[in-house]
Image 1: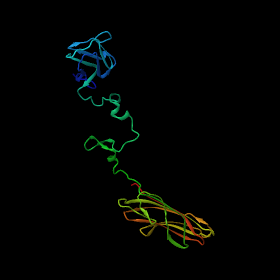
Image 2: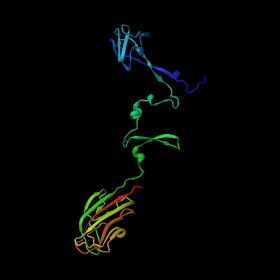
Image 3: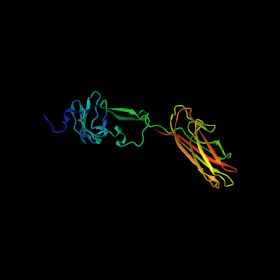
Image 4: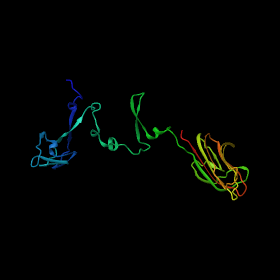
Length: 280
Protein backbone atom coordinates (compact mmCIF):
# COMPACT_ATOMS: atom_id res chain seq x y z
CA UNK A 1 0.00 0.00 0.00
CA UNK A 2 1.36 3.45 -0.90
CA UNK A 3 1.35 6.43 1.49
CA UNK A 4 1.43 10.17 1.13
CA UNK A 5 4.11 11.52 3.50
CA UNK A 6 5.90 9.41 6.10
CA UNK A 7 5.09 5.70 6.23
CA UNK A 8 3.22 4.92 9.48
CA UNK A 9 5.50 3.25 12.02
CA UNK A 10 2.85 1.84 14.38
CA UNK A 11 3.07 -1.62 12.85
CA UNK A 12 6.67 -1.71 14.03
CA UNK A 13 5.84 -0.82 17.66
CA UNK A 14 5.22 -3.14 20.60
CA UNK A 15 4.00 -2.34 24.10
CA UNK A 16 6.46 -2.27 26.95
CA UNK A 17 5.95 -5.02 29.52
CA UNK A 18 7.29 -5.66 33.01
CA UNK A 19 7.44 -8.99 34.88
CA UNK A 20 7.45 -8.89 38.68
CA UNK A 21 9.20 -11.00 41.28
CA UNK A 22 6.18 -12.14 43.29
CA UNK A 23 5.93 -12.45 47.09
CA UNK A 24 3.16 -12.52 49.69
CA UNK A 25 2.31 -8.80 49.44
CA UNK A 26 -0.10 -6.30 47.92
CA UNK A 27 2.55 -3.62 47.26
CA UNK A 28 4.78 -3.47 44.19
CA UNK A 29 6.93 -0.85 42.49
CA UNK A 30 6.56 -0.05 38.80
CA UNK A 31 9.66 0.68 36.72
CA UNK A 32 7.81 3.48 34.92
CA UNK A 33 5.51 6.09 36.45
CA UNK A 34 1.87 6.07 35.39
CA UNK A 35 -1.01 8.50 35.85
CA UNK A 36 -3.36 5.83 37.19
CA UNK A 37 -4.16 2.12 36.95
CA UNK A 38 -5.77 2.54 33.52
CA UNK A 39 -2.31 3.14 32.06
CA UNK A 40 -1.39 -0.52 32.60
CA UNK A 41 -2.95 -3.95 32.00
CA UNK A 42 -2.15 -6.29 34.90
CA UNK A 43 -2.11 -10.06 34.40
CA UNK A 44 -1.80 -12.58 37.28
CA UNK A 45 -1.54 -16.30 36.49
CA UNK A 46 -2.69 -15.56 32.92
CA UNK A 47 -5.84 -13.78 34.15
CA UNK A 48 -6.34 -10.13 33.23
CA UNK A 49 -7.16 -8.10 36.35
CA UNK A 50 -9.77 -5.35 36.54
CA UNK A 51 -8.37 -1.93 37.35
CA UNK A 52 -9.90 0.60 39.72
CA UNK A 53 -10.58 1.36 43.36
CA UNK A 54 -12.44 -1.52 45.03
CA UNK A 55 -11.41 -3.83 42.19
CA UNK A 56 -8.23 -5.83 41.56
CA UNK A 57 -5.61 -3.07 41.66
CA UNK A 58 -4.84 0.64 41.67
CA UNK A 59 -1.72 2.46 40.49
CA UNK A 60 -0.26 5.95 40.80
CA UNK A 61 3.22 7.07 39.90
CA UNK A 62 5.42 4.02 40.45
CA UNK A 63 3.18 2.52 43.15
CA UNK A 64 1.07 -0.55 42.32
CA UNK A 65 -1.38 -1.71 44.99
CA UNK A 66 -3.35 -4.97 44.80
CA UNK A 67 -6.66 -5.61 46.51
CA UNK A 68 -5.44 -9.08 47.56
CA UNK A 69 -1.92 -10.26 48.26
CA UNK A 70 -0.18 -12.45 45.74
CA UNK A 71 1.35 -15.78 46.74
CA UNK A 72 4.84 -17.08 46.14
CA UNK A 73 4.70 -18.99 42.87
CA UNK A 74 2.19 -16.67 41.21
CA UNK A 75 3.16 -15.22 37.82
CA UNK A 76 2.43 -11.51 37.43
CA UNK A 77 3.25 -9.02 34.72
CA UNK A 78 1.90 -5.74 33.40
CA UNK A 79 1.66 -4.09 30.01
CA UNK A 80 2.24 -0.35 29.84
CA UNK A 81 -0.58 0.77 27.57
CA UNK A 82 0.88 4.28 27.12
CA UNK A 83 4.43 3.21 26.29
CA UNK A 84 5.49 1.62 23.01
CA UNK A 85 8.81 0.20 21.92
CA UNK A 86 9.89 1.44 18.49
CA UNK A 87 11.71 -1.25 16.55
CA UNK A 88 12.94 0.86 13.60
CA UNK A 89 14.54 4.27 13.11
CA UNK A 90 12.04 7.12 12.65
CA UNK A 91 11.67 8.53 9.12
CA UNK A 92 14.16 11.16 8.02
CA UNK A 93 13.46 14.70 9.35
CA UNK A 94 10.52 13.45 11.45
CA UNK A 95 11.99 14.14 14.93
CA UNK A 96 11.73 17.60 16.54
CA UNK A 97 12.95 19.17 19.79
CA UNK A 98 9.95 17.92 21.75
CA UNK A 99 10.67 14.30 20.76
CA UNK A 100 14.18 14.13 22.24
CA UNK A 101 15.42 14.15 25.81
CA UNK A 102 16.70 17.51 27.02
CA UNK A 103 19.93 15.78 28.04
CA UNK A 104 20.68 14.98 24.40
CA UNK A 105 21.56 18.65 23.88
CA UNK A 106 22.13 20.35 27.23
CA UNK A 107 19.07 22.47 27.86
CA UNK A 108 18.33 22.32 24.12
CA UNK A 109 19.89 25.80 24.00
CA UNK A 110 23.21 27.25 22.94
CA UNK A 111 26.04 26.86 25.46
CA UNK A 112 27.60 30.05 26.81
CA UNK A 113 30.94 28.34 27.45
CA UNK A 114 32.71 25.23 26.21
CA UNK A 115 35.23 23.10 28.07
CA UNK A 116 38.52 22.00 26.53
CA UNK A 117 37.45 18.35 26.33
CA UNK A 118 33.91 19.05 25.06
CA UNK A 119 33.29 17.67 21.58
CA UNK A 120 32.21 19.59 18.49
CA UNK A 121 30.43 18.15 15.46
CA UNK A 122 31.86 19.04 12.06
CA UNK A 123 30.94 17.94 8.57
CA UNK A 124 33.63 16.14 6.59
CA UNK A 125 32.81 17.13 3.00
CA UNK A 126 35.15 14.56 1.45
CA UNK A 127 33.48 11.72 3.36
CA UNK A 128 29.98 13.32 3.41
CA UNK A 129 29.76 12.45 7.11
CA UNK A 130 29.57 14.10 10.50
CA UNK A 131 32.61 13.74 12.70
CA UNK A 132 33.39 14.92 16.21
CA UNK A 133 36.52 16.41 17.71
CA UNK A 134 37.39 18.05 21.01
CA UNK A 135 37.48 21.80 21.38
CA UNK A 136 41.22 21.59 22.10
CA UNK A 137 41.86 19.83 18.77
CA UNK A 138 39.43 22.10 16.94
CA UNK A 139 41.20 25.32 17.93
CA UNK A 140 44.71 23.86 17.63
CA UNK A 141 46.59 25.70 14.93
CA UNK A 142 43.94 28.42 14.52
CA UNK A 143 45.31 31.92 15.05
CA UNK A 144 47.77 32.22 17.92
CA UNK A 145 48.61 34.27 20.98
CA UNK A 146 50.19 37.70 21.16
CA UNK A 147 52.81 36.62 23.67
CA UNK A 148 55.48 37.28 24.69
CA UNK A 149 54.39 40.68 26.02
CA UNK A 150 56.93 43.13 27.45
CA UNK A 151 56.28 46.44 29.20
CA UNK A 152 59.23 48.18 30.87
CA UNK A 153 59.93 51.65 32.26
CA UNK A 154 62.59 53.92 33.69
CA UNK A 155 61.79 57.14 35.53
CA UNK A 156 64.17 60.10 35.73
CA UNK A 157 67.01 58.46 33.82
CA UNK A 158 70.08 60.70 33.76
CA UNK A 159 71.22 61.64 30.22
CA UNK A 160 74.39 62.91 28.58
CA UNK A 161 74.17 65.84 26.18
CA UNK A 162 74.81 65.35 22.47
CA UNK A 163 75.22 61.59 22.96
CA UNK A 164 73.29 58.60 21.69
CA UNK A 165 73.04 56.31 24.70
CA UNK A 166 71.30 53.10 25.56
CA UNK A 167 68.29 53.46 27.83
CA UNK A 168 68.40 51.52 31.06
CA UNK A 169 64.92 50.01 31.49
CA UNK A 170 65.11 48.84 35.09
CA UNK A 171 61.43 48.56 35.96
CA UNK A 172 59.86 45.46 34.38
CA UNK A 173 56.08 45.78 34.66
CA UNK A 174 55.24 42.82 32.36
CA UNK A 175 57.56 40.14 31.00
CA UNK A 176 55.51 37.04 30.18
CA UNK A 177 58.44 35.01 28.83
CA UNK A 178 61.25 36.29 31.08
CA UNK A 179 62.82 37.50 27.85
CA UNK A 180 63.88 40.99 28.97
CA UNK A 181 67.24 41.28 30.74
CA UNK A 182 70.01 43.89 30.90
CA UNK A 183 67.69 46.38 29.16
CA UNK A 184 67.44 44.09 26.14
CA UNK A 185 64.62 41.93 24.76
CA UNK A 186 65.76 38.64 23.20
CA UNK A 187 63.28 36.61 21.15
CA UNK A 188 62.71 33.23 22.87
CA UNK A 189 63.02 29.95 20.99
CA UNK A 190 59.85 29.05 19.09
CA UNK A 191 58.55 32.65 19.07
CA UNK A 192 59.45 33.70 15.53
CA UNK A 193 57.03 36.19 14.03
CA UNK A 194 56.09 39.84 13.59
CA UNK A 195 56.31 42.08 16.65
CA UNK A 196 54.87 45.49 17.48
CA UNK A 197 57.35 47.71 19.34
CA UNK A 198 56.72 51.14 20.88
CA UNK A 199 59.09 53.53 22.68
CA UNK A 200 57.80 56.55 24.60
CA UNK A 201 60.26 59.23 25.74
CA UNK A 202 59.68 62.31 27.91
CA UNK A 203 62.83 64.43 28.35
CA UNK A 204 63.18 67.42 30.63
CA UNK A 205 65.80 69.81 32.05
CA UNK A 206 65.90 72.90 34.22
CA UNK A 207 67.15 75.61 31.81
CA UNK A 208 64.46 75.38 29.10
CA UNK A 209 67.07 74.78 26.41
CA UNK A 210 66.29 71.41 24.78
CA UNK A 211 66.26 71.59 20.99
CA UNK A 212 66.42 67.96 19.78
CA UNK A 213 65.29 64.62 21.20
CA UNK A 214 65.37 61.28 19.40
CA UNK A 215 63.96 57.93 20.50
CA UNK A 216 65.58 54.98 18.72
CA UNK A 217 64.71 51.28 18.44
CA UNK A 218 67.69 49.05 17.74
CA UNK A 219 67.50 45.56 16.23
CA UNK A 220 70.58 43.38 16.65
CA UNK A 221 72.78 46.40 17.43
CA UNK A 222 71.63 48.68 14.57
CA UNK A 223 69.00 51.41 14.29
CA UNK A 224 65.73 49.98 13.01
CA UNK A 225 63.29 52.85 13.69
CA UNK A 226 63.42 56.31 15.24
CA UNK A 227 61.23 59.27 16.09
CA UNK A 228 62.34 62.79 16.97
CA UNK A 229 61.20 66.22 18.08
CA UNK A 230 63.14 69.38 17.10
CA UNK A 231 62.86 72.97 18.30
CA UNK A 232 65.31 75.29 16.55
CA UNK A 233 64.69 78.02 19.15
CA UNK A 234 65.95 75.74 21.93
CA UNK A 235 63.43 77.02 24.43
CA UNK A 236 61.77 73.80 25.56
CA UNK A 237 62.07 72.40 29.07
CA UNK A 238 60.48 69.11 27.95
CA UNK A 239 59.97 67.09 24.75
CA UNK A 240 57.96 63.92 24.20
CA UNK A 241 58.82 62.07 21.00
CA UNK A 242 57.63 58.52 20.45
CA UNK A 243 58.44 55.82 17.93
CA UNK A 244 56.74 52.56 17.02
CA UNK A 245 57.24 49.92 14.37
CA UNK A 246 56.44 46.38 13.28
CA UNK A 247 59.44 44.13 12.78
CA UNK A 248 59.95 40.47 11.82
CA UNK A 249 62.01 38.67 14.46
CA UNK A 250 63.38 35.17 14.90
CA UNK A 251 64.85 33.39 17.91
CA UNK A 252 67.97 35.12 19.35
CA UNK A 253 67.19 38.44 17.60
CA UNK A 254 67.31 41.23 20.18
CA UNK A 255 65.81 44.68 20.65
CA UNK A 256 67.31 47.61 22.59
CA UNK A 257 66.24 51.21 23.16
CA UNK A 258 68.38 54.34 22.77
CA UNK A 259 67.98 58.08 23.17
CA UNK A 260 69.72 61.17 21.84
CA UNK A 261 69.27 64.62 23.43
CA UNK A 262 70.70 68.00 22.49
CA UNK A 263 70.27 70.44 25.37
CA UNK A 264 72.33 72.16 28.03
CA UNK A 265 71.55 71.43 31.66
CA UNK A 266 70.49 68.56 33.98
CA UNK A 267 69.08 66.37 31.22
CA UNK A 268 66.81 63.48 32.30
CA UNK A 269 64.02 61.35 30.86
CA UNK A 270 61.06 59.21 31.76
CA UNK A 271 60.85 56.32 29.30
CA UNK A 272 58.66 53.29 28.65
CA UNK A 273 58.67 50.54 26.03
CA UNK A 274 56.10 47.99 24.90
CA UNK A 275 56.72 44.83 22.86
CA UNK A 276 54.27 42.11 21.87
CA UNK A 277 54.01 39.46 19.20
CA UNK A 278 51.25 39.95 16.63
CA UNK A 279 48.70 37.22 15.87
CA UNK A 280 49.02 36.18 12.24
